[in-house]
Length: 107
Image (cartoon, rainbow, N blue to C red; front, side):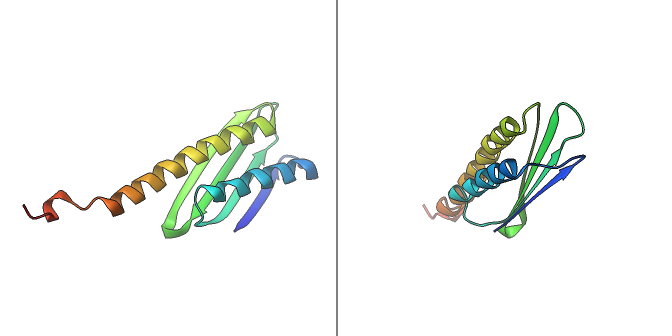
């Protein structure tokens, strides 16, 4: 899985890049079919904007954005959002496979 971190209107410290990378890797625990994660941090204003774009197999993308004065806090909030999106998607896919359509069951 590829993780790309980019910053607009400034640079991120190595420690902050490492923090974002570690948090992004944790998403694999919830869904192992992730192919890439793109993180964009906009440092233009006092309130920073962070965006995660997570690509998964079968052309499903997960996207989350957060605005916060602290980049680490924004990343933590985004990870929570993405975890919920991934769990919801995974639940739908698994339920769809387990429950046959009611019209297919003979009485």
